[in-house]
Image (cartoon, rainbow, N blue to C red; front, side, top):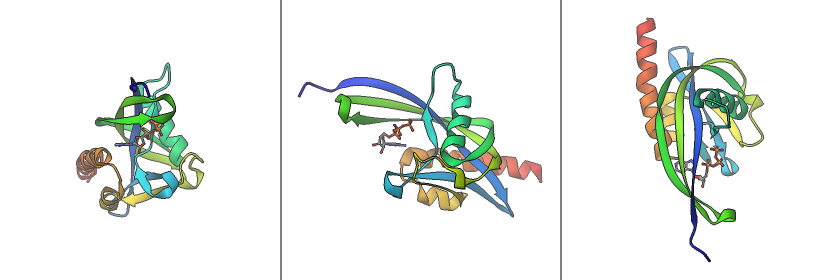
Length: 150
Ligand code: ATP
């Protein structure tokens, strides 16, 4: 087989949070039959800003609407696209979002599940190291927001 070609993709996603009693909860989605838990995200489409993509993808995948508060950071990884014999380097921008409405019951058919988790539970649940790093940063950012409101 010919050597794999190289391509790049840019996606954008969000850590959507809400306060529940004294806890902070965030939403994750499960893929690959429900075994892999990750942050909601998707490809940035033509004419969209990464913030717009984050809001659209979070809404589509989790069923939840939220407003973007701040950029959290980026992650990058390589994966192989079998059908195209291509190696792809994907960069994903992540934004902190505050929950405004909607229900995880309305999650997309493209994901197996969508659910709220207490922040520390979510940190244990996420499958990818990159997502965990983003969640750790998000935890610090949310902590500052919550304590400044008190
Ligand atoms: P998108 O949601 O951006 O439209 P997709 O669903 O087509 O993308 P990815 O979620 O990027 O594709 O998955 C492609 C491959 O990369 C899969 O094999 C998946 O396991 C792997 N992958 C997904 N997220 C990560 C991550 N954060 N770190 C490392 N590998 C990942």
